[in-house]
Image (tube, rainbow over all chains, first blue to last red; front, side, top):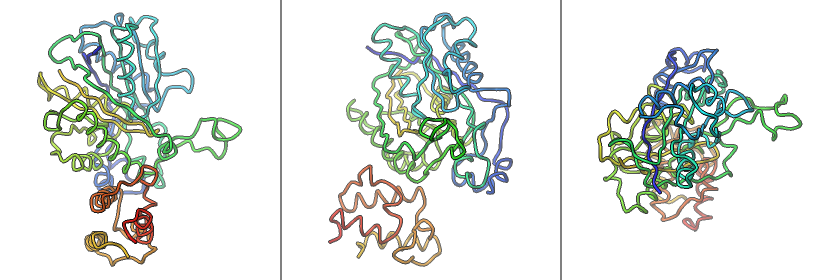
Length: 328
Length: 81
């Protein structure tokens, strides 16, 4: 049974942090940040804003772009690496903040930057099993609150921005711009769990969730991440196209997780496609982790026509990765 | 001895980095011959040139850190005998 991505929305905090503002904190130049990431600016939340605040606004925007009211949602699936609290999850907080939302199941997933694909597969299964008809999947991040703004962490702290995106997944199409989920593949390789991680709070850190030796900042072996991201994204794209008897020429737009512009360019070279066929907004928002592909999908709607085919690609901590093929 | 295709690639990388070819045990990253993205290109070259696939477990920068390590890897992969 198919399901349909019937509407989407995004929400970005107002405050813009340029490379010129960030660079001195990281001991680098604005040009160095742009050369190494393609990022020119990113958004940042205010102290009083949390990830669930951004998510709630993104969900509201998705609902505004749909024919649904909050009351009609049957399920919430949220992905974040920067939750409001360790416990409870973020999805129940969005349920609480979303005016009109019934006491529906609200579930967190922790699939890093590939959250969009993992949540879409869950939504597909819930719809196929008739548990739900209308599901809201969202990704939201306020990573800025947990970054090490110090030269030792320049390579990772230059990347992240805050934001949220949401997608309504339904059992029926709503209009000609509803996207049918044709195929989806996801995978993981836990052998690389420590190559992109934030260790604390966690129970692998000794006697306490957070002890004096715990790492409370994100850590990344960038070269390993890039090697695997390019390989896995390339192979995921090729596999999903092959098993649907399609070629890349038949895909109108590739919408990837916005990790780093240089990575997306390398991916384009590997796939032998022109850069113009890869949607990017990383220059404006930075890497918004679990929210990025949601935001990209939402923004890409403006440049897509009916009867188009798109490929979503995402790779993140875990490692987790995958691809989704959609047609409207 | 590294195969010619590898030597040619590294010579070109050294030229672009405006540096000399490093010693066998010098880090190619520290010498400026490889970075995060040219490493992807380098691994693609290895795989295409020698018809091998670098396993996921070995797909790490440490495997290609120096010319000596590259030679070890290619020997183990039976590209260099």
